[in-house]
Image 1 (spheres, rainbow, N blue to C red):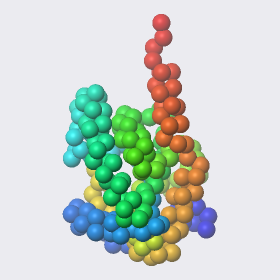
Image 2: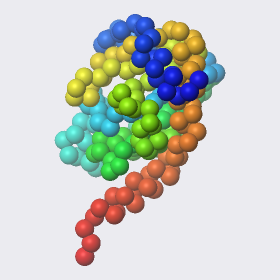
Image 3: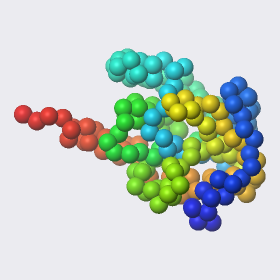
Image 4: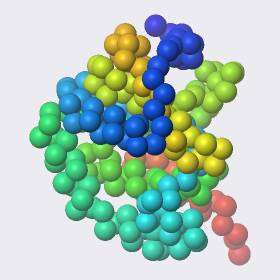
Length: 209
């Protein structure tokens, strides 16, 4: 199935709208029984709000060093998280679409994603130019697949705060979307390559003299 066909199929599919705790409870119950097909996520928006995240709050308040320090303090917890995931017999994979120059949010999130990638949360970064041919009707949705059984299209308000998600249980659609994300992952840059490019881009914007 062509990538554009997957997006068109998703746009007309019927799903179950879950908001707030209903979404979180549903996601958490399904996450730990994903199975070998794994967790696959596509992130497309360039700005989010995460007011329950202490590092994001520090970043949002302009306290960059505190934000980075808070992320580094998560190493132990994230190591345990990915150990538990491995014990449950699956892995996680993520594609992060990026526009240049990077938003401040993406500069912050890339620190977290690089740490996740190091500890077992496989991450690739993809230039937005690689998906623009799929976005004639709007930017790609935020998508998550859990194994072969569950797909979520994540929902956000106008400020970038997550509200919940629409769940789809059609296995054919779940597999098609997972394969779509896998295709994007296969042409993305590694976390190391992305960090190097981001650092070079930042240096190029600094005043000389």
